[in-house]
Image (cartoon, rainbow, N blue to C red; front, side, top):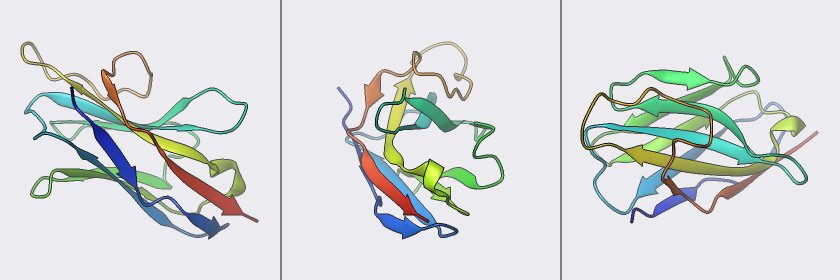
Length: 128
């Protein structure tokens, strides 16, 4: 079982920036994909960004050009840099992780089903 912990969520004004972090309870494997998701009250969980162990990334159209996913390989922590935030970005942000032990490196994915492990989330509130 891998435990994921997100941090960095807070309240910010529209136009501002935040950086979220996601750390795992164990060293991440050489073959993985991870994703950042968000869920606003009354809405379905949606994927916003993903990356895999090869550094390939994928973004939802709604955040392209504003959000960037990355990893600090020394600290083994993923980040979601969020710029030009607007009130529609208000949500609980969660990270998710999928590891594989054989076969190819999984492609980055912003859909829910590939992921085995999920964090509890961190609240981001953007005020106008």
